[in-house]
Length: 370
Image (cartoon, rainbow, N blue to C red):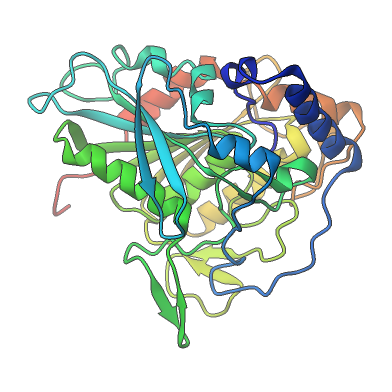
């Protein structure tokens, strides 16, 4: 979603004029609200695939693969549409084929890059956290998304991030429906690729592969985990509902079986364990949208730990209505709740990292055959 994290380190390398232009676009997006979209022709998988953008900001991001401070850069890997993709990998010293470790995959927010992982505190835990492996520690993988179209307000309608609106995430790859071929979601294929590359090293405990993410990346992490049986669990922060939020002209209802119309979409991993950490007052009024997602998951039998935090990071039982009440996250712009929600959204809940780790530890894949 919008404004998750402008990467501090990249901004240091950009002329002040470029920074000013970026901030101006962000302010404009907040001041004028949602971009107006004509309803697209909906597909059996929701919206058509996102379009890769070209222009000043798109070119700037495309020309700068992640820096991966303290880690290594993976890639480039070229997707089916010809775009190059990179990822950051962070590994503790104790990782080896003799000591495979859990793998956590982090998906960054929109208007951000893979380097924004440094704002979460996760990198500092790679040699400490207990995720249930034979030893403490885990491998941390942060793929980077594309600069493409989003169904978000203002400047975030064209930005770095992930396409959670085209929901063709079939584990079998490309599929044909009623004589029409539908390619696999390109961003899902990117995550597939980097995960498989890490598995191929022999250093990953394949019973403990987890997803996390921030905002738009959290929405993509939820959608991905709900469709990949190789994922043990997902614990994310501040996700818009990946099936229906904000400006999406083609919302869908997730179902654990073949859909009966384009208004439904099948998920292929309904046994997944999910945790959603979110704010009672959040950007765009997305807290009540999180309630919608929770109802969707529980109605189809998906296990969900729903954690709502107040401004002090303490658990509460309900959303703050002053920050929006729309189940589609149509929060008002210009109210005090708007600015409070933005401030909360831009802050990763580091105090909840231990809770997320414990949730992951408690939810490995079951032994084969069970």
